[in-house]
Amino acid sequence: MPRKAKPVSGVFEKTEGSGIFYVRYRVNGKLVRKKIGTRSQAVDYLNKVKHIRSSGDGVVPVTAKAPARTSAGIRELMEGSTLGELADGLLQQIISDPERYKDQHNRL
Image (tube, rainbow, N blue to C red; front, side, top):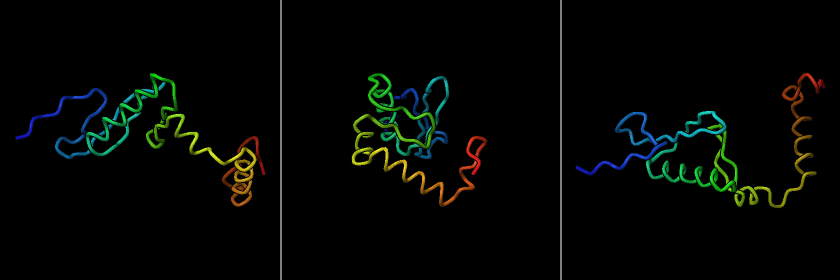
């Protein structure tokens, strides 16, 4: 019988024996729980979140859907695109589906 792994604060298995692990942390008082996969992946993700939080070098996601990104990862995403290109892309989305972008301030 293999030895049980040491418990890591913030990593848990919802259903014992399932092999699917979750990460739990707080951002500005809000609890974030994210389904990861294996235990090692969950520990790595939590270590990444802790590193970003302690160094201030990136963005810790407030929702479970968003990934944790360091500033180097953000730069890679933004590389090659300008603000004008981003604004043109948003304008095309608004033109293609104007019902989606209606609100109190922007009544098209």
